Every structure is written in C-alpha cells, then in structure tokens.
Figure (cartoon, rainbow, N blue to C red):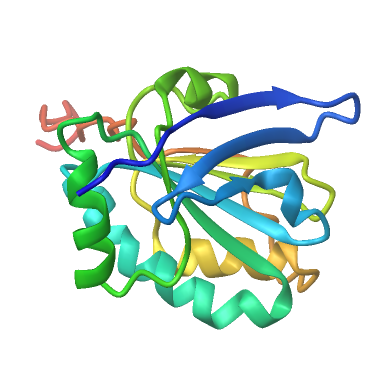
Length: 181
C-alpha cells in the first residue's frame, strides 16, 4: 500500500483566519480556507485513540445532518508512519463520510491552543476564524447545540468558546461534616 506524500501547514492570515492544509487519504489537499463560507469542524484524532474511535460515528452523523446547511467536518490524524496504514481501513470499516487528513502534528494543535492530547476539536466560523475549542471526546447534545448556535439558531445560553473535557472534576469531599452529628 503506497503512502501519500504528506505535508501540513498551519498559519493565520491578517484577518485571524486559520490556514491549515493537509493531504487526505486520497492524496487531495484539504485546506480550511477552501471552505470559506462554511462552518468547519476540525477534529484531531488517531486510530489508536479509543475516545477518538467513539466520536467518529458522531462526527459522521453530524456531517450528514448538517452538510446541507454549510457544515464541513474534517478529521486530522496524528497517526505516525507506523499507524497511518490503518487509517483508510478504519475509514472504510466505519463508513466515515468526511475527509480524513494525514500528517497532522501536535505543533499544529498547539498553534490552535488545543494542547497535545487527543481528541481535540477546533470550530471555525464561515469567515474561517477559530471561534471555539473542545478538548476531549465530543458530546452529542453539546455538539448539536454548538452547531445550531453557529448556524444562527440561538436557543438559551451560548456554548462556551473553550471546553476542557480532560480536566477531572474535583472529587466530592467524603469527609463527614462536623454538623452531620
């Protein structure tokens, strides 16, 4: 199986819009700026990441549900050269309906303020501006609410621009209170 020539670019233009270009599993260059006028969900993942495997069907469902409304899902794999050959079979087995990008790096993630842990997702508005980041596995209701909000259906409180799902919630204090006697 031939491995495509990989390259990746990440920068920001003068308007603050991200410029990210990676090759997909078919050898085509996918550039976030190509999707100007659409909302882009850029998910960083790997084939060996169990939470990433869990959220791929959700991302596929959201791509199908929202593609007619201008939402594009892209999944940038941080798999190394040893695990990259597993990407295409993963995509076929899971019927992934969106482009899987090769050769993503943690440097690119850090420039988007996503840290180094996966999964991590960046949300770009129709102008190509980074407007939100979610660290950790995506939640279906939160993702739907965020996409609806970005599409102009503002119901309730705006979704937070930054969610750190990797942060553990503080353990409840199991020490008995002096007032419980």
